[in-house]
Image 1 (cartoon, rainbow, N blue to C red):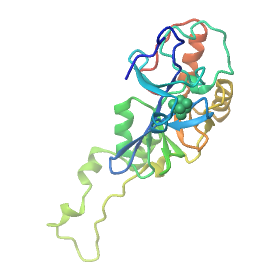
Image 2: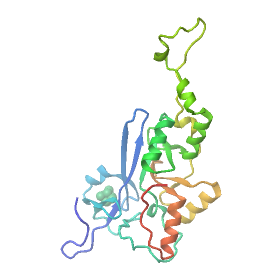
Image 3: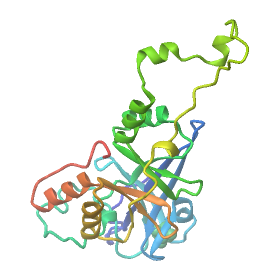
Image 4: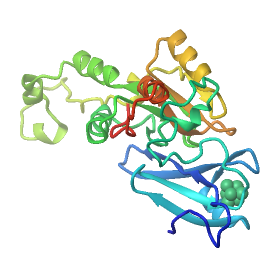
Length: 261
Ligand code: SF4
């Protein structure tokens, strides 16, 4: 990785932030889909595609903003341009047509529908998030699962110490004398598919903050999935992201989110 900036007195090379969707499967397997918005092709493209592009210059990591970017000779930086400088955008004009890609969370945790609620709970706690998209095999959103969904599932399941103590697995009952005609069943695992909201409120990455705020308010949701041309998740926008943008536009110095909403 190299540093961006003037080379031989020339203009800085544009850098385009990398968005990564980390998708967790039911077997604990994790896959990462890394994309950038290409201003030349006017669509999202994968990082490997960039690395084989003749315009590609380097990958860059900005420790302050905790972002990684593709540097390439693509003319002016496109939408979703790097905002490593914390002062950038502070006190500027309140521009509601700003692309939501500029303020969305670019590192998204996603789960497949088969992932259990217990695993989702672990991800929510580990990453300090309050919800995540549920995606199909292609990375397209099929639902949203939130902390409230997980809590509701736990309540409906009646998770208590007493139930834990009384829950029997097939192995546990081998020595037990089960009367003829009775059976022992494995407890059914509750999965993302069972608890998610099967409707995804989403917007294309080219949509504006104005559209995003209006849609979230209209639908009464705190987060929406941001998708690329092919319908895959490339980011997530929370109501807190919009508030941070509003605060910065009003002149407050607000650092990037430590935890994703
Ligand atoms: S490296 Fe090529 S494909 Fe990638 S953003 Fe730049 S111009 Fe687009």
